[in-house]
Image (cartoon, rainbow, N blue to C red; front, side, top):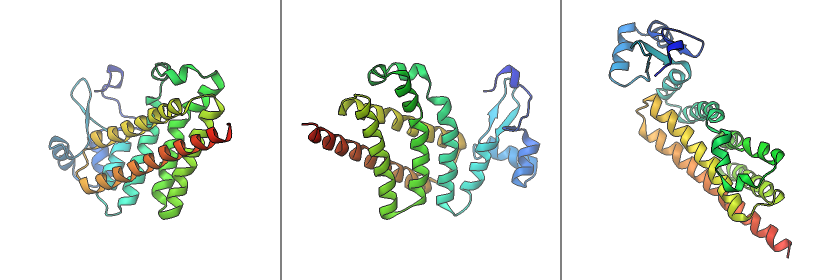
Length: 216
């Protein structure tokens, strides 16, 4: 629900019924019916007015097309914008591994959620050995960062899992708010995302083992 300050307002991000109907190329009554039926993502102001988030409507439009890779890319791009809002200092402060870091190290880790999503975009754009290399490169980056900052392998894994969870939460947030009814596309996308995250985690652990053997 929008705040009182947003009541009745239309901005570059928020659209009213007339604007969204023009964007979709349908009559306003059609857009109204779609939103009433839960087919079109919609929000309500405190006064009960319909407001539509532009990024969600763009994603809804994209989901109606047959090009599933483009749909996945748009979803990840929306999640990328949301991730910056979800990674807050208070949430990180509760993590024991984060408490061990100095300010410079914390700054680098705060960028990790964004870099993870950007890496996912690259992963989805590729296939085979190229996609595998993308995930391995990120896993090596997480391991190298953790080792350089004095984290144990368990702590470095916790750090990665924190940002992996932020990634999944951002994507699920897009899914829930967009009212998309294309389960096959979503299942395929989340399967690829899981494979991406698993490959990163395995590479992180393998790299830590190599570091530990070399330090003996």
